[in-house]
Length: 306
Image (cartoon, rainbow, N blue to C red; front, side):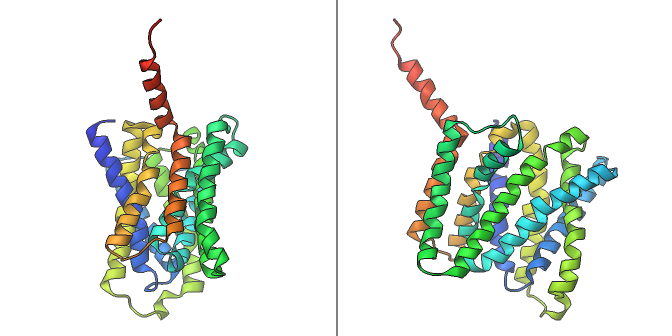
């Protein structure tokens, strides 16, 4: 990757890690589904303007929009709602750590849902380490009898599973001929339409007190920075650096999210959370394989020539 690609990767990790920070600022000031609705609707509007100004075709045809509706549920409506509902109990740092299990779930979903991405020994070891980290983190809350915390962590894991299923489902858009940016717009627009009835019937935001400028600014940052701008950077990096290098963002998102949580929000992590995060990181490293390949290349260069 070029130096500019690395800069974009760092920016993307900060934007996606910052989504947990922005949600934490908004939680408690706005109803949960309203937060998610504002996030996806504002981001869809921004990306729609980008498509219009760049002349990129909008999604067309009922088969495409059917696929986008499913993508909107799996990649936006459900996981965004799960995290907002959970973060009132877990905080942003722990939610970001649990979000890092998305690649672990993706391996399982791809193994059973595709024919070309099967598990191998390294992936199985990585899965064992990663989910071992989840057990370490959740075990303390379970033993302490803190049911609310356990259920909040389960919601974060459910969100990660949704992202994993969405990743496999999203493979069909290339076959359907939908440009990536149009896919992002379509799924955000779809989730906007699906969330609107929940906001009107369940949240009824007009009955709640008017929030202050901090949660409103957080909603703006969540929608325009951590969603719309993040998607623009994501697809720019996907084209220039490739999917393998882009996967490095998985390692960086918890770092940026924890940094914001600790330095700005004053959150703290228990020892079990640090231990669990370490195991998840080790599991992702084993699955990624690049570090193992580098050591293998070094050992081969050090072998004496007969």
